[in-house]
Each structure stands twice: as structure tokens, then as C-alpha cells.
Image (cartoon, rainbow, N blue to C red; front, side, top):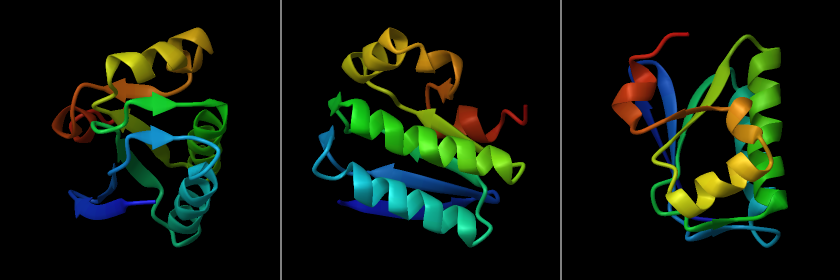
Length: 112
């Protein structure tokens, strides 16, 4: 999986450079997020601009990261979620669980 991590204003911003997050690569994403959290990087923003498809295993990987970050008093927010991917979050009502922002700046400037 093609992932790029940048530290911006104390946040770990994870850029997902994949068109799909599915059963073939979601395990790698889940492992990567858990590794970040175990290292104490609990303020995470996942940038999904290039992602055009996500399945239940991809949603599960992000949800696992979200739950683990919250357990450590952190957060995992999503940004640049494309329309077709956002529809999966809405269908599963996970849009009520995740903080979803239009872009990285909006997520970094929202300390709720």
C-alpha cells in the first residue's frame, strides 16, 4: 500500500495514495494505523483524496484506527473524502462516527 506520513502542527497526516481500499490492502492500512498509535501518534488525519472505492474491510481498518486513537485520548479524522467513498460512510452510518472534513487545514484547525 502506498502511504505517506507527514507531521503537520503536531498531527500525523497520512496520505493514502491508492485508488482502492479493499480486502487486498486494508490489513496493511490497519497495521500501519495501529503502529502509529502504539508509537504515541494519536492525533491522526487520514487524507483520502485519491481513494475512489472502499469496501467493508477498508471501513473496518479505519474504524479500528479510530477506536484505538480514542482509547488513547486521541482522534482519527478523515479529509478529502470523495463522493463515492462518502456514500459508503453514509450507507453504513459511519459518517456519524468519524469526523470528516473538506481538507487537511480544516481538520487541523478544529480541536473538538
